Image (cartoon, rainbow, N blue to C red; front, top):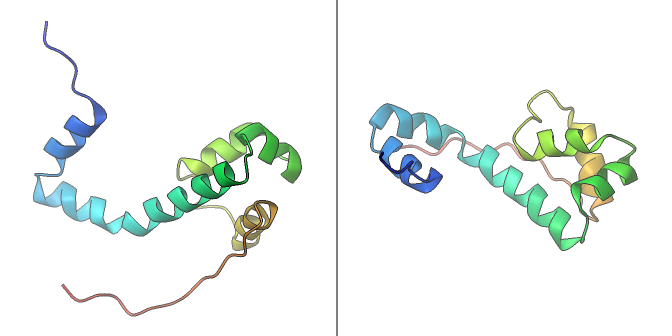
Length: 99
């Protein structure tokens, strides 16, 4: 029986496909934002449950946010999360990079 690939092995192989890589690259900013929220929560020494309690939401809402489920979340809700973590949120509009 063959060994199941790790996520990193799977990702490396998948990103060799040009179409997959192009779609993945489109999500780069989303992944970066997720990472910032997770790092901010950890820096504030909050578990997902503790942050949820502070925001008066359920823990699964924080888990969804951290997994990219914020696409339907309002900017004001994201700002509330940032504020609870001791951060302010800044949104900017910049021209696309030319390839």
